Length: 154
Image (cartoon, rainbow, N blue to C red; front, side, top):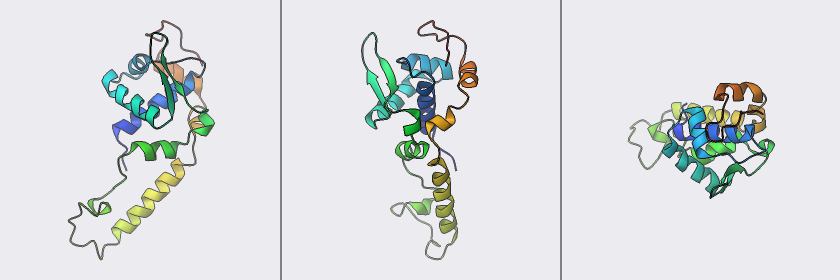
């Protein structure tokens, strides 16, 4: 099972925002903290906003914040919203399937169960569960917020 880079970046944005709930954060600072191309994050943040996970404000004092508390952001729900599909094999997509053994194959059923178990476990976590070590996470992101010049603190 492999999640897309888009989902990875979406989760990173939520983690970052969860670390700094007292202020608006910018795409530029998140880009620099994670060393991710800013243009990639623009699309990620737009979709997180469209999906309701973050609230954005334009302008000089703009930025973004979480739309919910970390306890209200379910990791499984975020992943379901960011993954285009969870097709582990070609046969999961009936429209594109060309596998000649689909009618007798048991493998797809095992993989359906594995996918369900994967999502069930992730749905048991919230962003708050991921943020239990804020000081360690902030230390790994760097000492200084390049965009604001402020020291990163939880």
